[in-house]
Length: 284
Image (cartoon, rainbow, N blue to C red; front, side, top):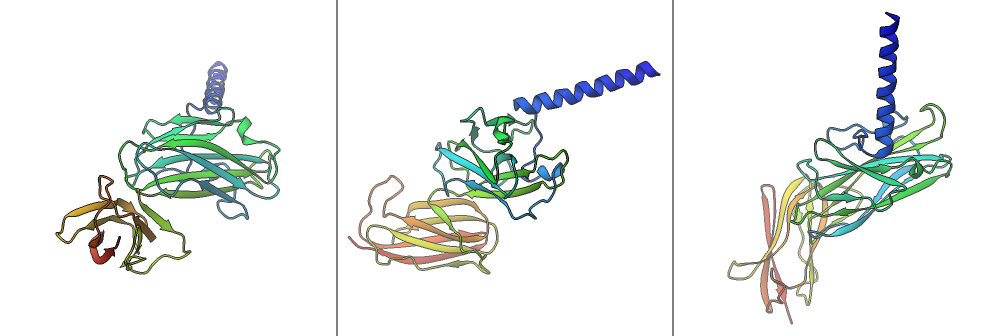
């Protein structure tokens, strides 16, 4: 019996060492970003989104297919001195999209789960033990070769106090939505209470104009420009967007990049089961 217990203990220790080794080498750390179906760093640390600190994702508002874009995650909390984060990127169907690239191997590492989801997180050196109040990590994301619609970056972080237990630690989560090309989200601080498409401005215009619209709920949205013959001139955006206020800019060019002639054009915003069409005038 004693030999059996000893063997069990040894196996448990080996398993623990294997997990620690895997985590330190970026080959098998847990999915803890707060993305759909995932937990967060609060599994091991205290105070989920209840402290005075924060986590932020700095990234472009939109992407073009094939772009390589710089991403930065920053964590802050006054008085804390040990840091961590984990991030993944998913499309509207919660599937992995694009490719995450580690650009600072001393401070960040990458893992791919069996689900295909990719993750980046801090290394042991990248935890910046002893650095007070805030820190950040930078890496890159390669957009897919075709427009995948809106994509969401999910991250969970920890601002720890280097104590032996979780007491006094703070965990934070946030997301960043990168939108379909030519559509940008306007941060107004409040969500709209209805679907609305505003008159473009300026109107008449030369050489470009802005189209504004509001979504009360998450919707599949298409924004397109048509000529007086009803022919589609340009698709400004087509993808799923979360609720919010948006703008799209048309520079008077067709799908192939050519400048169109002066005249009357129509823009159509379709969201879910709602559609609005408005008239605009291009003068040269």
